[in-house]
Length: 536
Image (cartoon, rainbow, N blue to C red; front, side, top):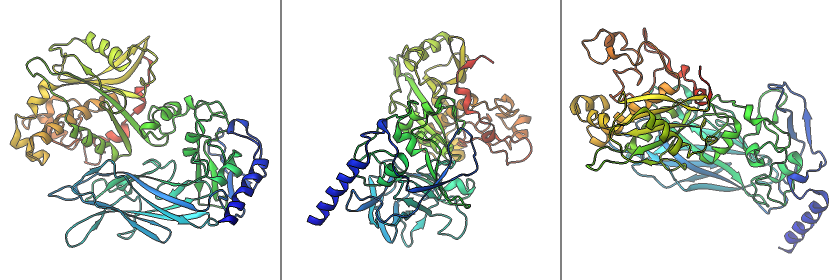
């Protein structure tokens, strides 16, 4: 014990003399202990020089042990796992040679707060740690492996996430990596193009981390050899380059590892010490620039995966009980539909700071919508940063000229296609008038699930208008009944944008794969229409 204490004290004294800056804001060059080689420049504005350690016998001399932790943050079934009940999920995590098995989350299609992690002490002189994650469904007789992997191959390989974690830099790669379409720290079983196949596809959110002396989440080797910051001081919140985004975000989304080619090693995507015009960057083309991505990071936004935020403000019930609120199950249905396509759909029904209740008014005018938008969404601030980030959904008792429609917001001559309305008077009625027929389409006779399906169809349809979806099969009033010609002509267009399918539980856009008169909605989506601009 005495030897360890002496070792730590000596190390601290040496670091105190060598690491002069007390923060990232007082940065000074350290002795270079890594090699740099030039590589192809993918974006001239971004430093992508390769960095690889030469050798290291202790990647963190400030701690006695390096402990790697894999935390499971959320699990969601994207398809039916068990026909007669919800899945009984459990997770297997392997860190190097140690396997950890979670408890079972019984009968839960969505495990929002697993509160489970696995930890393992790893060698301090080995840069890389092997990590694998498996998601299982407990069953009588034999358990079944769910798909959370983008891989093909044999049964296990095609469903298991295999990752490499670096204790030098605290990042990982493999079946999940920075800049992949599903997002960093998110696994999507549909990424192997199995969206339309019964593969028990799920999504799983996770993080991998390690202990470090100052608790800022920046590993010792990274701080001393790449960032030249002090491993003794917590650098969270610092913005050394004054570009409006702190070091922890630029670290999380700014460092990656490339395995292929002669320039294998670590690359900067964002450098916390080089100023970047983040207001001009929107790598994933979701309409959010990187300043907005940072502000929405608290809710899971990722600058390399498309995110869509919806604030839903709902009208209070009337004096005689008129009106209704959107069923919570609707949000899960919509989130799942977009998740399969790697669009992270975020609902703000109060959980993200919005979700207002508007006083009841039986009959509304267009002027009401403008006033409510400014009062309940913008909160009287024409510069509110949520405009251009969140869509606004207003749920009223009656509509104005239609039972649901999309519309633009207008402020100081700048228009944004960011709003839609859904009326409850019609949709409550629509969820009840054909219970047997609609129940067969929706595969449920549960009243609340039928309500949820109706609202999901309406909301996804109107959202589609704000995303620029249009084709001859969209909003065609001649596609509703079997005796109408276009009912059959546009039958292959299996989209919620088609009136034929809006309320029958499809809850999806079409991918254009169903033959003549179909249309590829997913490829036509334009998330940037949320950005205010001069009216086109």
